[in-house]
Length: 239
View (cartoon, rainbow, N blue to C red):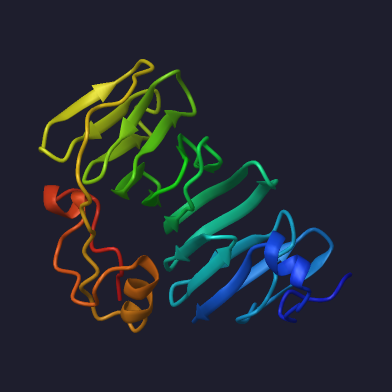
């Protein structure tokens, strides 16, 4: 087996092309084909097809070429496909917050069991659990696509889209105005909305780090769209 993932690599070329661990707290592990599973530490460069898993106490921040990911506890992320033109990740479970650099064409995609999120550049959150998959948009816009049907929708800031395991062919969209509707066909843009910052208020030890990473004040006075509705979404950072 090759060297474990716990050993940082310092190649400038690797740093530019590959995802790396910026920060990890608690129970975080990584593995990849032919590489032993070890605990990654800051500076670790993740190889292609790496799988990153956070446990109950784990959080991790990943970074690469103007793109950053915050993984919350009990989350699993797979680096499935990565080229200069397009990045495709697979989120199997848990909560992850994405900050993606802006380009003229869609270049970043997060796939889940029932929903895919495709972006040109934005800040958004993906939640995956046993009952549903949800995408919350904080800045820019995100195209969501059902993995089961042809349903497609554009999600604007302050809105969120959800697909349930019971009805995976239908996208339920809640707009910033509070209007909710079900989408079963391919739709275009659903209107405009201004930046709606999420709620970061909690007792989590890495609150300040995540707020700074996402470019918002540590006070973080607004609530996430899902939390406003009183649904399954909660504050982004949970203790």
